[in-house]
Length: 287
Image (tube, rainbow, N blue to C red; front, side):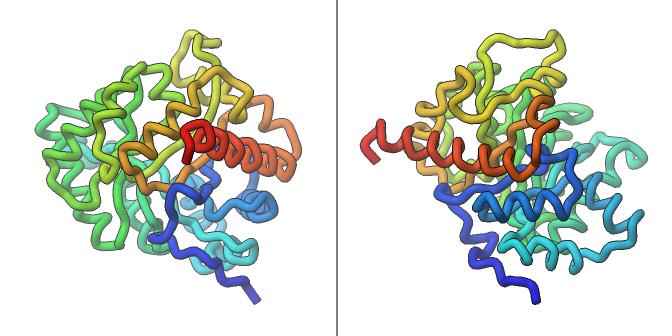
């Protein structure tokens, strides 16, 4: 008989931890659930590609996945990642991914959908398309977090904020990732961001200087456990608290080294180091 997760998706807040899909992305779904539950995570995320494989190719039902997560006291609350949401995106290019993410949001009662910070066409096309994505997500009770990524069209918080605010949707917000914040250097933009616009947070650590010439490959190979890198996690947590963010922390530590280790050990390390980093940051600030 599946256990009933004690926390509703809508009730997750800054004291809760979500295990991002990519932290154990090379592991099967059931292993990720078991490892996350054993490590004390409150919820997990799921990638659209994994969902398609599990449901549309392997024949597992969404209910089966929900029950598998519930056995470990978890919910699937984070859907990754909507791409091709711009109004200028051709119908045969990435639009299917948006539909899959919306299908997942409905199936799991997800808290939010992540939207990748790249788009086709003009900024106006982006605003129109993002607003439409938010409307469709709202039909399933989900918010949408637009993630700024250096080198993409949505390259910083300021650009993401403009799209979100111009869309005018109440369920529109941003995803703030420690890696992109540090590498992009847009701390002042975060400090000026209203906390209610933070839909989701991705926590990780890493080196300040790139270890690989390609930005994306660097960020999917070389992330570190909190406390093992050079990122200013104290400032990150304290700033989010100061601006009044109420989003949960989704820990996204993508590392080729950690992928070779026992997923149960890795999940425990991720949970313990993340909770300690958040607690230390708040203690240093007097919270």
